[in-house]
Amino acid sequence: MADRELLLSLLTNLETEMREMDLWETQSPPAPAFESQLPFFYDTMNFGQWLQWVFVARFRAILEGQHPLPPNCEVAPMAEEYFAELDVYSDPVVGLLRRFDEEFK
Image 1 (cartoon, rainbow, N blue to C red):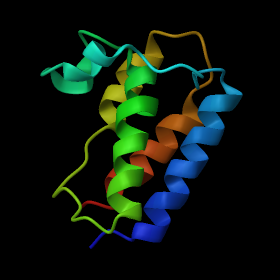
Image 2 (image 1 turned 90 degrees about the vertical axis):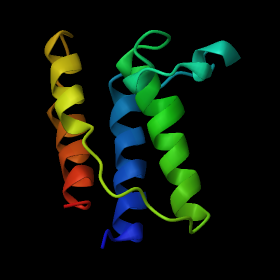
Image 3 (image 1 turned 90 degrees about the horizontal axis):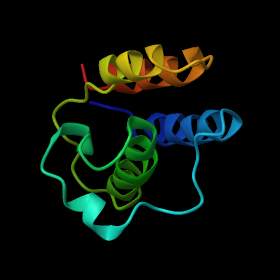
């Protein structure tokens, strides 16, 4: 069973790391971007946007609202692929996402 307090802490740390990497945006994507039916909304957002506006936001709502957790989480592999294309030091973000995924195993 995933530790909800640990997951919230990981989300907070993820936000901090993304801010330090200048990946945290102040304005959300337009409303239609959230209507994507594709994994990671890759047709309407880049992965950094999806992390912020979908992953972090939805998991915070689930955790803070004491809603049931999904049965699994596998976001780190996508993060590894996305950040390999960018010229940024992403180890802290990818590491946090790996730790987040591990809570569901």
